[in-house]
Structures are given as C-alpha cells and as structure tokens.
Amino acid sequence: MAKAKIITQGLNKEQNHLNLLRTLLKDGSLNKFIFSTAYLREAAVEMLSAELGSVAEKIDFFVGIRNGVTSYQGLSKLLTLGINLYVIDTGVTSSIFHSKSFTARSDTLAVSVVGSANFTSAGLMRNVETSVILELDLTEPSDVLYMESLESDFHKLATNYGENVVKIVDISNIEDLLKEGRIIDENSETLIPTIGNNKMNKIIVPKMELELEVPISKSLDTLERTNKKTIIISEGPLILEEIWRSKELVRRDLNIPTQGSNTNATGSMLLKKGSYKINQQSYFRNIVFTNLKWINKDSTKSYFEFAVAKFHFIIDGIEYGWHELNIKHDTRKNTITYRQKQPMTHLMWGTAKDLICNEALLSKELRMYSIDSRVDEFLIEIA
Image (tube, rainbow, N blue to C red; front, side, top):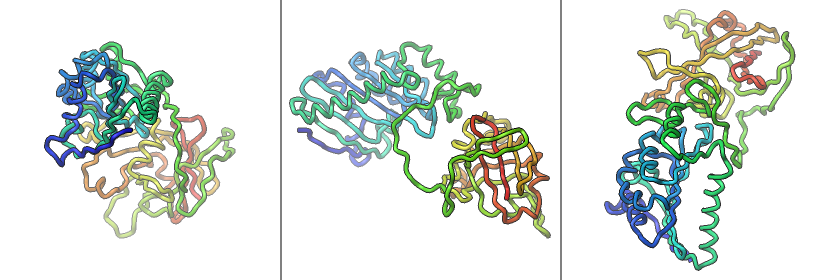
C-alpha cells in the first residue's frame, strides 16, 4: 500500500526538490523514470547534469513549450545528455501543458512526486513549492494500478498527439522550435506567439484536441447570449457570433469632447468588460483578436503590440461599410494600471472616427461579432 508524505520547499533548508530528485536519480535500484514539467531552464538541468547523465537512457522527459519560459538552452542540454525528450505544444497559450511530476520505478517499487515544482532553478530550490511524495509497493494491486495509469497517460501523450507532442531527436529539431518562436533564447528573450503560428504568422501547430470540461457560466451579467445569427448585408449573408457587448456608450467611448474640457479625445475606445464576465486584461488580446498578426512597431515603446483588422459597421440599422482599424495592446505587467486590473487593449477608431463621434449614439450599446471563417474581419453594431 502506498505511503504518502509531503514536501513544502522553503520551510526546511534541506528539503527541496533538487535534493529529492538527486536522491532518486542516484538510487541504483530504479531503472525507469518519467519526468514532466511545464517550464524548463538550463540552470536546472546543469545542477542535475551528472545524475541525469548517468541514467539518461532510462528517462522519458516531457516538457511544455509555447509558454515564454522553456528555453533552447534547457532543451539542448537535456538532448546532449542523451535523454528521451518530448516537447508538448498545445497550439495555444490559453491552455498549455502544465504538468509537474517526477516518477521513478523498479520492478517492485516506485516513487511518484506530484506537485507544483517546475524544472527551473527557482522551482527546484528557491520558490515555495509543495509536492506529494508517494512510495509505491508494486506487489500491491492498487499501487500497480496507479503506476499503470500514470505510464499509460504519458504513453498516450507520446503516441496519440503527433502534431502537438514531438520527440526531439537532434539539435535541428530544437533550432526549428526557436526559429518558429515556440521556445525562447535565454540570452535574448522574446514574446511567444499565443497560437500555433510561427513568427511569420503561418499556422504550424493545430490546437491540441483535449478532453476538457468547459465551465458553465453566463458570459453576460444580466443578458442571455445567443451563439450565432445570420444577417444579410449588401455583399451577401454573414454568419455572426457575438464576442463582446459594451455597456451604455459614453463620450469617451465615442470620442466626443466634453464641453469646457481641455482633454483631447484619444481616438480610441478602451475595451473593458462591458456586459461580459471576462478578464479584460487578456480577453481581447488572447481570445478575440488572437489570430491577428501582432507586431511591435514603436521602437521607443516596445511594450505596445499592434494589429490590424477590418470592421463592418451597422449603426441604427444602416450599413456604413468596412473600415480597417488598428488595435493596440499594452503587454506590460509591472505597471500600476496592470496591478489595478485595468483594461490593456484599445480599438483605434481611425477612419471610423467620424461615424462614431455622434452624440445621438450616447447611451446606446455596441455589439462586436466575429464573422464565420474570417480570421481578421469583424462586425460592429451600434443600436
């Protein structure tokens, strides 16, 4: 029967995940290892390189990528040691591979460590991390069942998701990941594409088909959202899905100057929660507009990302055609604005400014729709 104990790194100087893994890797009776981590860095591999190298051919190592942390250097180091290395790219940053477990076994016993520690120097030594340590007796049916289930899950990962889970066989595989923007270079870290695209915005990895339960919650505070509707515009029918709804429009939204005010209109609308229950700091950048091509075009303010999309306007039932508008997102997470959970994305009105700068639209509602099968086209309806 399994014996369970717990380790909380940071409460005892000797109790850390580095020492725990070092002990497992040095145990000559253990002949098979399965390690998994969301994040991997070179420093962690370096600290355990001697122990990892001594049993490298016995280790299957699963590492998450497209997360802005896992690095070229860390993967290269594992490959050099001769470890059986797999990388997992779910195709989106909104649902990443986040597993952290370290398992070692022989024919008769096993140790399974499951917790919060990643394979980084902080995860193995510096952070406050908690893991459960299970000591398993593989002559006991219940313990055997646990190990069979764990090994089956990782075997399923390695074999059933060919486009998302890739075995690294040589350095060129890792170099390709770096070129495609799916891992970072520790010497010059850059933003990771939020979907399965490379730096040229070409789709190279599909979204991983996971069996996930979607939480049931209303997207609107008081209003019921319908999934899709079809409307007829001058160019033909469009299949729309509502993706956002504002609250009552105010002067700032519509760029209408306030009488007696010296404040200049911003030329944009700050995209807030509106009537939706969303994380207003990430929803527009990572969900609504995630498939757009985002670039940094201001060298003096490199924390701003910009994208372009086409919007068809319908105001009070009248079509006003298409306008190509810019969207701006502030990527900084160290500002007072971000810490106060303020919105970070602006829709720049551009050529549509004269349409919306109209006092007759005050207190009306703006609805934004995605258009079926069109990545960079949307419809705005104000009524």
